[in-house]
Length: 330
Image (cartoon, rainbow, N blue to C red; front, side, top):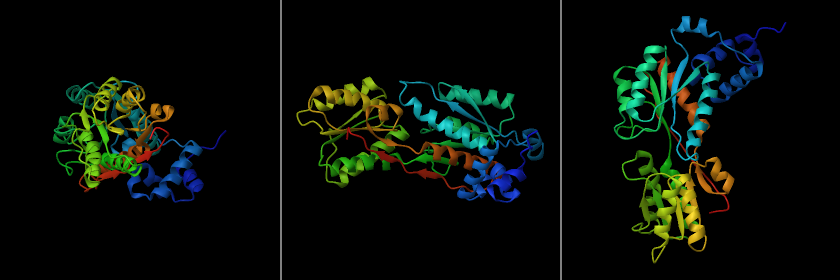
């Protein structure tokens, strides 16, 4: 008969104290990252499973958190949050939490789902994604004292609640600087309509970097809804200008894929850079700005467990840096 794996077994395997293992399971934010990683690896290697019923009786928690599955769009950018969800589920499991997934097509339906879930399950908290200006979801949860963190900034008040985000402006600034260094001056932008927190942030990096290089961005940008067809249509419009851009940066890989199709059929091929580094971008060789989604998911779990452990503790937001993934198209 196999020996039962206990906290003591994990502690011996990871060469730490039993209290350290307990901290990793119950309060991971207070454990050094290197130590936490070693303990989590031991948990996985040994197949340790905490006694959830006993823990719930002891702590008064269900160890259950909920997060929404984003509606599918064009099959490209929808994969971004798929990767985030995988990372969140794995990190939460290592910290002793289970993840409940739910669907909702808009904020009001999501709020209705919160009400249903909180009435049906003993949830500890929520991880929200896709924040925007005047987000009613965070206001609803905060008014009821429901613990939550967001993957995305509270755009109206950065101190409103705990959040993790990726610096989109830094990503597009790096893309613009790369093209400027390659000799391009007329660098076009295809992004989302003004008013989108994420879209405005990504546009800002392009705009600011061109201005700093002495380039006037006037006439070099187009606003549109997200999608391949939209990217192609607006890229054709930009490239039809008497003095067209010699390179394009897009707010998403969907827009970039459409722009790339337009650039390849309108005239001489020009560099196109997307955002999110989706599997499609990797498959077709599209240069894109990648988000550290695994790290973002882990930090969301860290913040949420910290909120649950010490509700009144002031926690600093987390702004992660993206990476420009260069491929042969730029």
